[in-house]
Length: 469
Image (cartoon, rainbow, N blue to C red; front, side, top):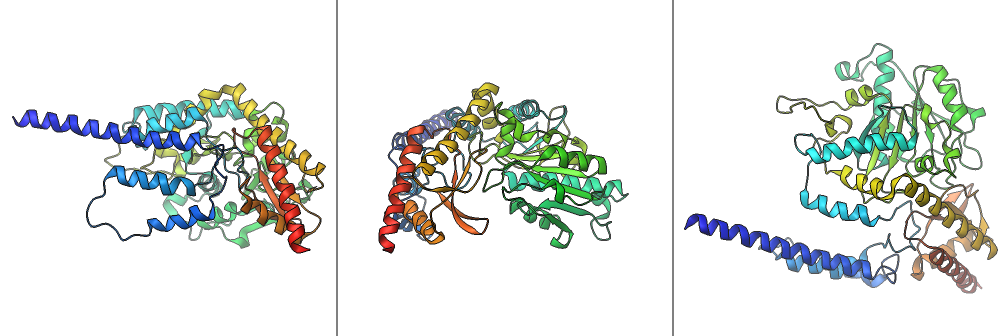
């Protein structure tokens, strides 16, 4: 009787879960069905409705169906519609259907990708992605891969490996001796480096006094003529894709100088390293293969689901020794252990959706995706310029910087765009003046979406002019 009851309870629990997951998928399908008409940024009403979540922690349990309904009815309208084709704020990618479907299945699997023995499937797919990405980016055979939350963490890992390697060359073992009393090192980077780079350096104990900033040119690139003398104590940080202009550093002369000096080279390629996989844009990345470590996001240009950051390192031993962890309960296995190349031991299996994104597109599809994003950015530039807007950057990749006749009008126009509900863009400052920053990152963005957004720009500017008259 007990066994029969236990079996019945097991069956009931399985049916309950299946019903709950079907309901969640129904809500997800409703959300996708409305994407084309959903505003790219939540309406004021949707934002006010979020106050419904401001409740005391319930004393008694809440039915899963009830909380799912609240998430859908209140939460869905308060999302940014990254997959709707009209969101151009920040460098936020959309999500490929195949990769999202794989993510849904992987979430049900709920694998811990720390060790191969914890999840053989996660370990296998990470190993495959490691090989595929090295081939796709033209990096040295044997390049190591670590999957982390984003380029912020990936940059931290790459610079950690570089810091330790440089000190090791000077006879200092950080893992044994720590940092106190370590030989000095240098960091050379452009003034146009992303804000996450000095943040990562600060976490690593490298202060601003150790950072040598070379001036960026008017396109946001590292000027090779401004490169200071390098040596074996130096980490050189370069950039594939300026976050504002989309410009790429001239890697060949910079990397050759660094290689000659014995410096460690890290390339921050959050969204721009994918140019390497596009025939029409690969020239922008000539020389990146000469670096020692690279950071890139799959959830940006590749359109994998959030979050999926990637650190790549030429010297596998340098990355593994920098991120080492050991214990009697951690059995080394014959397969790839993901925790050896990342800071985390417990982590979700990001490699599953990364594998799905890469496999669903293939090399040709990735080439076409990158080219499509760049084409939509050029279309944006052309349509806005024809309407009398100023384009402040050379549109070499997926970023467009836009301004009106005056800084004040630019600011007022941006405010109108953001409140209008037709498209959404962010603001920035470029060469001393405010600008509207357009980031074309979603596979779902079509020519029609860009034309619609350009018309919204025109309307917002006219409204801004009228309001100031």
